[in-house]
Image 1 (cartoon, rainbow, N blue to C red):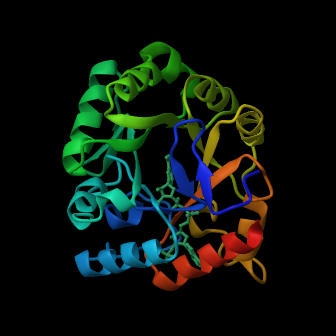
Image 2: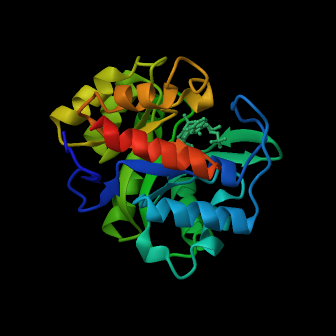
Length: 262
Ligand SMILES: NC(=O)c1ccc[n+]([C@@H]2O[C@H](COP(=O)([O-])OP(=O)(O)OC[C@H]3O[C@@H](n4cnc5c(N)ncnc54)[C@H](OP(=O)(O)O)[C@@H]3O)[C@@H](O)[C@H]2O)c1
């Protein structure tokens, strides 16, 4: 395990912080599974969250076309500070008129990455993950989307490729064909442990999504954030936990808990 704050993403040369800032809540508040409803932060509030994240040492931002206006907002909010961040976006899921739909064809993957470049106002998206609908193996085999991401890497439009998966078979297959997978890993959900084991054994990277079970773990027990982060980092395969918060105090508390966990 890399017992330090900055961690390598496979052999890509990228180094990400052990906590990433998940930005769903900067762009979307419909059809989400959080315990309570919330208002999307305005620009000043979002800039404060980004500034505090940087001050805390966070350099990884996780976004996606499916996160409503998240990519577009980041493109504007990060003007003048783009080089301070490693941005991870996705391809395959679209969220329009309150509904998700999926497209994993090679044409769409390329179109989506080019659109992310425009929305994020950048010439390279550091990391791009296939945003799976759950049929991980079928998506990889039928559409060859990880091969397209490999091509985009060679063209210099992205630096690292991967997939946000929901199955053990899919997670391992994705790791065989890319640098990184994003998996659910928390005190309540550990079904994908074999994917973390595989990543650890093969020098691949794991980004954790829903480390706090989308907030549902935050009211359990005496110190649920500490218990959650101790658990997440008990596995040596974990590269970074992408935590979603629009609360400055929670962000600080989460970073402190992660720093104490390794
Ligand atoms: N690829 C995928 O398919 C996928 C799916 C889900 C998520 N993700 C990524 O992973 C990120 C995180 O996932 P997530 O947002 O679903 O789950 P999460 O990080 O487990 O939980 C976020 C929720 O927990 C609350 N929270 C955070 N820290 C807290 C604290 N210290 N005390 C109390 N409450 C706290 C947040 O509310 P406050 O805002 O009030 O702090 C928010 O509602 C997302 O933003 C996204 O980038 C990816």
